[in-house]
Image 1 (cartoon, one colour):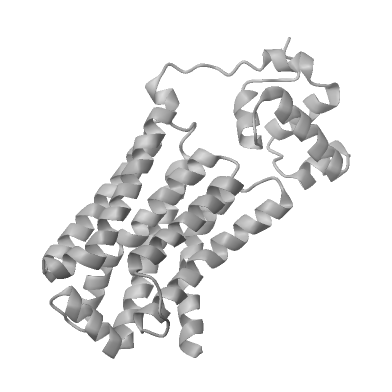
Image 2 (cartoon, rainbow, N blue to C red):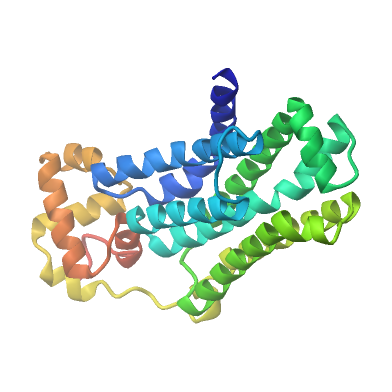
Length: 306
Protein backbone atom coordinates (compact mmCIF):
# COMPACT_ATOMS: atom_id res chain seq x y z
CA UNK A 1 0.00 0.00 0.00
CA UNK A 2 2.91 2.35 0.78
CA UNK A 3 4.44 1.74 -2.66
CA UNK A 4 1.15 2.49 -4.39
CA UNK A 5 0.78 5.73 -2.43
CA UNK A 6 4.37 6.71 -3.24
CA UNK A 7 3.76 6.21 -6.96
CA UNK A 8 0.63 8.34 -6.79
CA UNK A 9 2.67 11.10 -5.10
CA UNK A 10 5.32 10.84 -7.82
CA UNK A 11 2.62 11.45 -10.42
CA UNK A 12 1.63 14.68 -8.70
CA UNK A 13 4.93 16.26 -9.76
CA UNK A 14 3.53 16.77 -13.25
CA UNK A 15 0.64 18.82 -11.85
CA UNK A 16 3.17 21.66 -11.43
CA UNK A 17 3.35 21.81 -15.22
CA UNK A 18 -0.19 20.66 -16.06
CA UNK A 19 -1.84 23.41 -13.99
CA UNK A 20 -0.57 26.45 -15.95
CA UNK A 21 -0.66 24.71 -19.33
CA UNK A 22 -4.14 23.20 -19.13
CA UNK A 23 -6.20 24.52 -16.24
CA UNK A 24 -5.09 28.12 -15.85
CA UNK A 25 -5.17 28.84 -19.59
CA UNK A 26 -8.47 27.07 -20.27
CA UNK A 27 -10.38 27.58 -17.01
CA UNK A 28 -14.12 27.51 -17.79
CA UNK A 29 -16.41 30.21 -16.39
CA UNK A 30 -18.79 27.56 -15.00
CA UNK A 31 -17.83 26.54 -11.47
CA UNK A 32 -18.89 22.91 -11.98
CA UNK A 33 -16.97 22.51 -15.22
CA UNK A 34 -14.00 24.33 -13.73
CA UNK A 35 -13.96 21.95 -10.76
CA UNK A 36 -14.15 18.92 -13.05
CA UNK A 37 -11.29 20.23 -15.16
CA UNK A 38 -9.15 20.93 -12.09
CA UNK A 39 -9.81 17.42 -10.79
CA UNK A 40 -8.75 15.92 -14.13
CA UNK A 41 -5.56 18.00 -14.15
CA UNK A 42 -4.62 17.01 -10.60
CA UNK A 43 -5.68 13.35 -10.58
CA UNK A 44 -5.35 12.17 -14.18
CA UNK A 45 -1.62 11.61 -14.42
CA UNK A 46 -1.04 10.34 -10.84
CA UNK A 47 -3.57 7.55 -11.45
CA UNK A 48 -1.86 6.82 -14.76
CA UNK A 49 1.51 6.50 -12.99
CA UNK A 50 -0.07 4.30 -10.30
CA UNK A 51 -1.66 2.03 -12.89
CA UNK A 52 1.60 1.68 -14.82
CA UNK A 53 3.38 0.76 -11.58
CA UNK A 54 0.84 -1.99 -10.86
CA UNK A 55 1.13 -3.23 -14.43
CA UNK A 56 4.95 -3.06 -14.49
CA UNK A 57 5.24 -5.12 -11.30
CA UNK A 58 2.52 -7.49 -12.50
CA UNK A 59 0.15 -6.75 -9.65
CA UNK A 60 -2.75 -6.38 -12.05
CA UNK A 61 -3.58 -8.01 -15.35
CA UNK A 62 -4.25 -5.26 -17.83
CA UNK A 63 -4.25 -4.35 -21.52
CA UNK A 64 -0.96 -3.61 -23.21
CA UNK A 65 1.09 -0.49 -22.66
CA UNK A 66 -0.24 0.92 -25.93
CA UNK A 67 -3.87 0.27 -24.95
CA UNK A 68 -3.58 1.91 -21.53
CA UNK A 69 -1.72 4.93 -22.91
CA UNK A 70 -4.21 5.49 -25.72
CA UNK A 71 -7.11 5.22 -23.24
CA UNK A 72 -5.41 7.82 -21.03
CA UNK A 73 -4.84 10.10 -24.01
CA UNK A 74 -8.48 9.81 -25.11
CA UNK A 75 -9.74 10.56 -21.60
CA UNK A 76 -7.61 13.66 -21.10
CA UNK A 77 -8.12 14.94 -24.66
CA UNK A 78 -11.89 14.68 -24.28
CA UNK A 79 -11.76 16.31 -20.87
CA UNK A 80 -9.79 19.33 -22.03
CA UNK A 81 -11.60 19.70 -25.34
CA UNK A 82 -15.04 19.55 -23.74
CA UNK A 83 -14.26 21.69 -20.70
CA UNK A 84 -11.73 24.21 -21.95
CA UNK A 85 -12.84 27.67 -23.09
CA UNK A 86 -10.22 27.84 -25.82
CA UNK A 87 -10.70 24.37 -27.26
CA UNK A 88 -8.10 24.66 -30.00
CA UNK A 89 -5.41 25.72 -27.56
CA UNK A 90 -6.48 23.04 -25.09
CA UNK A 91 -6.30 20.33 -27.74
CA UNK A 92 -2.92 21.39 -29.14
CA UNK A 93 -1.54 21.53 -25.58
CA UNK A 94 -2.92 18.09 -24.78
CA UNK A 95 -1.52 16.60 -28.01
CA UNK A 96 1.88 18.07 -27.20
CA UNK A 97 2.02 16.87 -23.62
CA UNK A 98 1.02 13.28 -24.39
CA UNK A 99 3.79 13.10 -26.95
CA UNK A 100 6.21 14.45 -24.34
CA UNK A 101 4.99 11.86 -21.80
CA UNK A 102 5.94 9.03 -24.12
CA UNK A 103 9.06 10.52 -25.68
CA UNK A 104 10.58 11.33 -22.30
CA UNK A 105 10.58 7.66 -21.33
CA UNK A 106 13.42 6.70 -23.65
CA UNK A 107 16.18 9.24 -23.02
CA UNK A 108 15.31 9.77 -19.36
CA UNK A 109 14.68 6.10 -18.62
CA UNK A 110 17.91 4.91 -20.14
CA UNK A 111 19.92 7.77 -18.65
CA UNK A 112 18.57 6.83 -15.22
CA UNK A 113 19.43 3.20 -15.85
CA UNK A 114 22.97 4.17 -16.83
CA UNK A 115 23.39 6.20 -13.64
CA UNK A 116 21.62 3.89 -11.17
CA UNK A 117 22.18 0.40 -12.52
CA UNK A 118 23.86 0.13 -15.95
CA UNK A 119 21.96 -1.90 -18.55
CA UNK A 120 22.56 -2.54 -22.25
CA UNK A 121 19.12 -3.11 -23.79
CA UNK A 122 15.41 -2.68 -23.17
CA UNK A 123 14.80 -6.28 -22.13
CA UNK A 124 17.50 -6.06 -19.47
CA UNK A 125 16.17 -2.66 -18.43
CA UNK A 126 12.77 -4.17 -17.67
CA UNK A 127 14.28 -7.16 -15.88
CA UNK A 128 16.53 -4.95 -13.73
CA UNK A 129 13.63 -2.62 -13.01
CA UNK A 130 11.74 -5.57 -11.51
CA UNK A 131 14.73 -6.45 -9.34
CA UNK A 132 15.76 -2.94 -8.31
CA UNK A 133 12.82 -0.62 -7.46
CA UNK A 134 15.23 2.33 -7.18
CA UNK A 135 15.79 2.04 -10.93
CA UNK A 136 12.06 2.20 -11.62
CA UNK A 137 11.39 5.03 -9.14
CA UNK A 138 14.38 7.02 -10.34
CA UNK A 139 13.20 6.77 -13.93
CA UNK A 140 9.64 7.82 -13.08
CA UNK A 141 10.87 10.74 -10.99
CA UNK A 142 13.13 12.17 -13.68
CA UNK A 143 10.53 11.56 -16.41
CA UNK A 144 8.04 13.60 -14.39
CA UNK A 145 10.57 16.39 -13.94
CA UNK A 146 11.23 16.55 -17.70
CA UNK A 147 7.49 16.54 -18.46
CA UNK A 148 6.93 19.35 -15.94
CA UNK A 149 9.71 21.49 -17.44
CA UNK A 150 8.29 20.95 -20.94
CA UNK A 151 4.81 21.95 -19.73
CA UNK A 152 6.12 25.14 -18.12
CA UNK A 153 8.01 26.04 -21.31
CA UNK A 154 4.90 25.38 -23.41
CA UNK A 155 2.74 27.49 -21.08
CA UNK A 156 5.21 30.37 -21.29
CA UNK A 157 5.28 30.22 -25.09
CA UNK A 158 1.48 30.10 -25.30
CA UNK A 159 1.14 33.10 -22.98
CA UNK A 160 3.35 35.09 -25.36
CA UNK A 161 1.22 34.09 -28.34
CA UNK A 162 -1.16 36.95 -29.08
CA UNK A 163 -3.59 35.00 -31.21
CA UNK A 164 -4.08 31.36 -32.09
CA UNK A 165 -2.78 30.06 -35.43
CA UNK A 166 -5.36 29.52 -38.17
CA UNK A 167 -7.00 26.13 -38.58
CA UNK A 168 -4.77 25.12 -41.48
CA UNK A 169 -1.77 25.31 -39.11
CA UNK A 170 -3.50 23.89 -36.06
CA UNK A 171 -4.56 20.63 -37.75
CA UNK A 172 -1.15 19.50 -39.13
CA UNK A 173 0.63 20.37 -35.89
CA UNK A 174 -1.87 18.37 -33.86
CA UNK A 175 -1.44 15.42 -36.22
CA UNK A 176 2.34 15.74 -35.92
CA UNK A 177 2.18 15.53 -32.13
CA UNK A 178 -0.12 12.50 -32.24
CA UNK A 179 2.12 10.91 -34.90
CA UNK A 180 5.14 11.26 -32.61
CA UNK A 181 3.18 9.59 -29.82
CA UNK A 182 2.19 6.61 -31.96
CA UNK A 183 5.76 6.14 -33.17
CA UNK A 184 7.07 5.91 -29.62
CA UNK A 185 4.22 3.69 -28.42
CA UNK A 186 4.91 1.05 -31.06
CA UNK A 187 8.64 1.52 -30.61
CA UNK A 188 8.36 0.91 -26.88
CA UNK A 189 6.18 -2.19 -27.13
CA UNK A 190 7.36 -3.94 -30.28
CA UNK A 191 10.25 -2.53 -32.28
CA UNK A 192 12.82 -2.22 -29.52
CA UNK A 193 12.63 -5.93 -28.70
CA UNK A 194 12.16 -7.19 -32.27
CA UNK A 195 14.96 -5.10 -33.76
CA UNK A 196 17.16 -5.21 -30.62
CA UNK A 197 17.77 -1.47 -30.64
CA UNK A 198 20.82 -0.70 -28.57
CA UNK A 199 20.90 1.41 -25.44
CA UNK A 200 22.85 4.22 -27.11
CA UNK A 201 20.63 4.26 -30.22
CA UNK A 202 17.48 4.48 -28.10
CA UNK A 203 18.94 7.26 -25.98
CA UNK A 204 20.06 9.31 -28.98
CA UNK A 205 16.87 8.75 -30.98
CA UNK A 206 14.64 9.55 -28.01
CA UNK A 207 16.59 12.72 -27.28
CA UNK A 208 16.41 13.77 -30.93
CA UNK A 209 12.63 13.20 -31.13
CA UNK A 210 12.13 15.03 -27.85
CA UNK A 211 14.07 18.03 -29.15
CA UNK A 212 12.18 18.02 -32.45
CA UNK A 213 8.83 17.92 -30.66
CA UNK A 214 9.71 20.84 -28.39
CA UNK A 215 10.91 22.82 -31.41
CA UNK A 216 7.67 22.03 -33.28
CA UNK A 217 5.61 23.34 -30.39
CA UNK A 218 7.70 26.49 -30.21
CA UNK A 219 7.26 26.93 -33.97
CA UNK A 220 3.51 26.46 -33.59
CA UNK A 221 3.26 29.23 -31.01
CA UNK A 222 5.31 31.58 -33.20
CA UNK A 223 3.24 31.02 -36.34
CA UNK A 224 0.37 33.13 -35.14
CA UNK A 225 -2.36 34.45 -37.33
CA UNK A 226 -1.14 38.01 -37.02
CA UNK A 227 2.33 36.98 -38.22
CA UNK A 228 0.94 35.27 -41.30
CA UNK A 229 -1.53 37.92 -42.39
CA UNK A 230 -1.65 41.72 -42.11
CA UNK A 231 -2.97 42.71 -38.72
CA UNK A 232 -6.69 43.35 -38.85
CA UNK A 233 -7.98 45.45 -36.02
CA UNK A 234 -11.09 43.90 -34.42
CA UNK A 235 -14.22 45.90 -35.26
CA UNK A 236 -16.20 46.36 -32.08
CA UNK A 237 -18.21 49.34 -33.35
CA UNK A 238 -21.39 47.41 -34.33
CA UNK A 239 -21.69 45.94 -30.85
CA UNK A 240 -21.63 49.27 -28.99
CA UNK A 241 -25.20 50.01 -30.07
CA UNK A 242 -26.35 46.45 -29.42
CA UNK A 243 -25.15 46.30 -25.81
CA UNK A 244 -26.86 48.10 -22.96
CA UNK A 245 -25.16 50.83 -20.96
CA UNK A 246 -24.66 48.43 -18.05
CA UNK A 247 -23.20 45.76 -20.31
CA UNK A 248 -20.75 48.27 -21.75
CA UNK A 249 -19.71 49.08 -18.17
CA UNK A 250 -18.98 45.38 -17.72
CA UNK A 251 -16.87 45.44 -20.89
CA UNK A 252 -14.97 48.50 -19.65
CA UNK A 253 -14.33 46.81 -16.30
CA UNK A 254 -12.98 43.74 -18.10
CA UNK A 255 -10.70 45.91 -20.25
CA UNK A 256 -9.39 47.48 -17.04
CA UNK A 257 -8.08 44.07 -16.00
CA UNK A 258 -10.91 42.70 -13.89
CA UNK A 259 -11.24 39.12 -15.10
CA UNK A 260 -13.06 37.32 -12.27
CA UNK A 261 -16.76 37.36 -11.45
CA UNK A 262 -16.08 38.46 -7.88
CA UNK A 263 -13.83 41.31 -8.94
CA UNK A 264 -16.36 42.54 -11.50
CA UNK A 265 -19.09 42.27 -8.89
CA UNK A 266 -17.15 44.47 -6.45
CA UNK A 267 -16.15 47.05 -9.08
CA UNK A 268 -19.66 47.42 -10.52
CA UNK A 269 -21.45 46.99 -7.20
CA UNK A 270 -23.70 44.23 -8.52
CA UNK A 271 -24.17 40.58 -7.62
CA UNK A 272 -22.09 37.79 -9.12
CA UNK A 273 -25.19 36.30 -10.73
CA UNK A 274 -25.91 39.64 -12.40
CA UNK A 275 -22.34 39.74 -13.72
CA UNK A 276 -22.80 36.24 -15.18
CA UNK A 277 -26.08 37.29 -16.80
CA UNK A 278 -24.50 40.38 -18.38
CA UNK A 279 -21.50 38.41 -19.65
CA UNK A 280 -23.73 35.68 -21.07
CA UNK A 281 -25.67 38.26 -23.11
CA UNK A 282 -22.45 40.01 -24.16
CA UNK A 283 -21.02 36.70 -25.40
CA UNK A 284 -24.21 35.93 -27.31
CA UNK A 285 -24.23 39.39 -28.92
CA UNK A 286 -20.56 39.57 -29.86
CA UNK A 287 -20.05 35.90 -30.73
CA UNK A 288 -17.07 35.42 -28.42
CA UNK A 289 -16.94 32.69 -25.78
CA UNK A 290 -14.66 33.97 -23.02
CA UNK A 291 -13.14 37.06 -21.41
CA UNK A 292 -9.85 36.68 -23.30
CA UNK A 293 -11.63 36.82 -26.64
CA UNK A 294 -13.81 39.70 -25.42
CA UNK A 295 -10.72 41.68 -24.44
CA UNK A 296 -9.19 41.05 -27.86
CA UNK A 297 -12.39 42.13 -29.63
CA UNK A 298 -12.64 45.44 -27.75
CA UNK A 299 -8.92 46.17 -27.90
CA UNK A 300 -8.49 49.92 -28.37
CA UNK A 301 -11.97 50.78 -27.10
CA UNK A 302 -12.41 53.71 -24.70
CA UNK A 303 -15.56 55.15 -23.05
CA UNK A 304 -15.18 58.26 -25.23
CA UNK A 305 -15.30 56.22 -28.41
CA UNK A 306 -17.73 57.92 -30.87
